[in-house]
Length: 370
Image 1: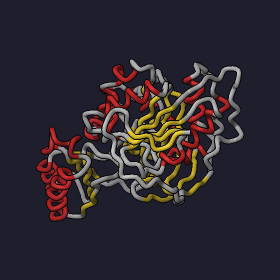
Image 2: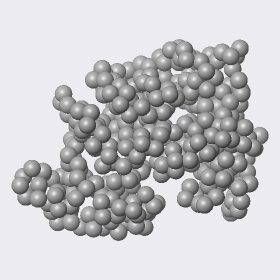
Image 3: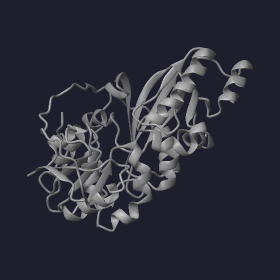
Image 4: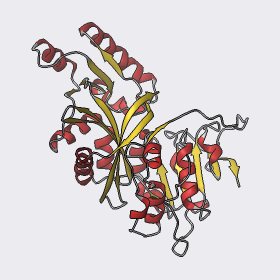
């Protein structure tokens, strides 16, 4: 675990120094270590977060505390860090900052960094689950029946066009926050009203505040085998490949145990999504397989919690990114994906700094530097 794998041998004659910045690093220690291994000493991994006790900061070469993503100074802090540390690429890890980074990408890239985030229209389709539903329908991909109007749902239930159980979730959501499953009209009514209140108090408030009356998605519940997919495009939005895994267990909204699969039907769905959406880099996608049917649920244009299972099954996307940063298109040797490879996550304790310091300027607070 946390090794690039014997299949990655960097081309030292073509290697250049790359400094990689991960924003909202949180608990993504595996990404920090995968990229450190892929760099092989030709650059450093920088991790930032607004909390000094974020575990991923411990494994980074340089760890910096920054303000909250909604702070007025956050953008200036990013630009300062990118400029000061000659960052090659910025890779965001939090859904909630993707719209802002997509909007401000050109301004951030004036510092010389490449921001690995899709354009605003792509982020809008993925972040707004109602638009995700419309995108999937437009491209003839199966997806659960989805509604944003409570009265329409009630009418369809009355007319037997829709049946319980149903799933309620924030229209603009992240990390499985606020998901509820209801079995009857009384539960639906209570859960709908309660979720609207909870949204106003949660970290999703900013994303939902402009359309709170249509901020809750109501969806039919699909019972089937759940799969996660890493759909990989290059940095120009060209499709590369799809890497699928069967989810054996979930924990706190993330894949906890999974087994790699090679399934042409899932690969075709990944290709259809990628070629029509033209996202940048890795996309995390959730699907349910019911018999011969495949229902697409979520599109998250970033590294997701299921990526380590793809990595350990043989695709070294971290090293592929490095090769692409260096202008090398031949990355076939980094893709040795195998099926029936199973892994399970486990908790590891990381000693964290004891500090109550908070960032007060764009200079931020350097937690660790080698």
